[in-house]
Length: 262
Ligand SMILES: NC(=O)c1ccc[n+]([C@@H]2O[C@H](COP(=O)([O-])OP(=O)(O)OC[C@H]3O[C@@H](n4cnc5c(N)ncnc54)[C@H](O)[C@@H]3O)[C@@H](O)[C@H]2O)c1
Image (tube, rainbow, N blue to C red; front, side, top):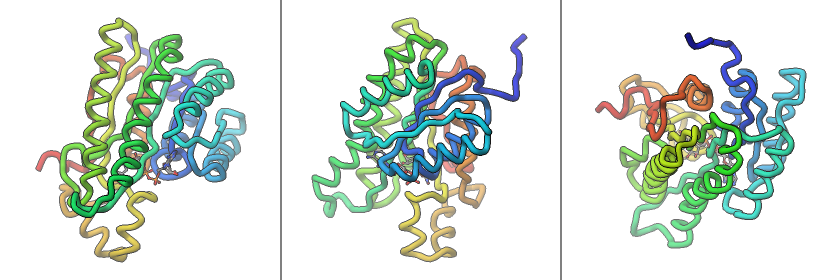
């Protein structure tokens, strides 16, 4: 019989990108509260330092560390993953969460902007998986969680770069998962697909449309008729990071209030 513990990721050592706010910060708090050590990065250095400090204050122990990282920088990935493994005594979870939105029809979008979205949203996930795998292989059972989006399956009008990037993350996830199964290593790789959650990435909607209209538009295709909460995604990551999901790999976990069903 499998033992159930309240500390669902006790002993896990997680590297989380884009952790200065939104879903990354919620995930960092969630994993730390459930017993993991967490190494947090973001391009917003002050923001991610504050999140790590808040976690350590709340838990009354040093379980969170932080560093500035631009996820487009290949050398920084190598340096920071090594630093995280040294600091935490290994690496068993990678959460590729950092991402950006980008509004613009296919005729409007500049090639430079398209490339920026692909670099931040897709290439970073490739780099993270590539350089984390040797460390994860040494800490089996291990888990990679890539934050994709509902946009991988359902088109956000005028978000062609974003939609495409998130669909690429889903397929990259499955590809990595299958490489791990073929190598017979216990490193799982799954993607999470949130619908709309109120974070920095959707702030432009609220700024442009106002509170009421933004909520109406964003919840229009959601059968549950509400936005998600950051913790709704953090709970999904908690499950995938933990050994509770030990038979789950190459999965697309939708957390979308039922949106994919219609
Ligand atoms: N909020 C939503 O509705 C929603 C829905 C689906 C998917 N997502 C995905 O969830 C993830 C987290 O987004 P969020 O909603 O918390 O938004 P957010 O804007 O609050 O968080 C994104 C974080 O990524 C960081 N970041 C941006 N560019 C970076 C770079 N080059 N290097 C390192 N860090 C960088 C930002 O500083 C920010 O802290 C993203 O991948 C996003 O696409 C969000």
